[in-house]
Image 1 (tube, rainbow, N blue to C red):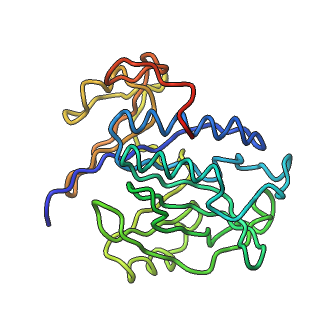
Image 2: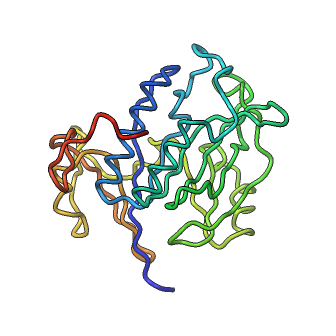
Length: 244
């Protein structure tokens, strides 16, 4: 197997339930930062656009078939920056009208490469609005080839992951951000020990967490400190308007 290096950004965000405009701005800013930091794949938290408990304050009338105009802007951004974006966004099925907790995979050329509807959706509480998905899907995503997706509790059922395993040699499990943080940190939240593979910008670059994958080896670090309003690579300020 050829050596593959892939830098992935997991966006550790705190969306406000029901605050669509603020959450979209938060996601856009974080995606811009991650692309500036050299991430090839950018993964958003579960239900980041609406906030996990959005239905309690906002209801569900705003959920539309996808891609909607905002997701189209995210697709254009992905194509412009040549990054893959795994965007969690509720969707309304245009035929049945049913609502789903979905993650969309946007390829580096801006295509919608694939999507996954959460199968183990909670039938009570904050996810009661969501219809459970019924199948897994795999799709090609450079540079790894075939990729599959899971959302949070989908990873708790071996049968779902085994379904992906049967369909493709590789699958990527996606959960809410706290479950992805496997970095050893101090009480202040900084990385306890920087690995030799961690870039020199690690100490000054802002979040998110990003692993560097080389073959079978994964090196993780948490970017903390520094001026989060400027790109650590070129020192230029992040624009308040990212085009998303």
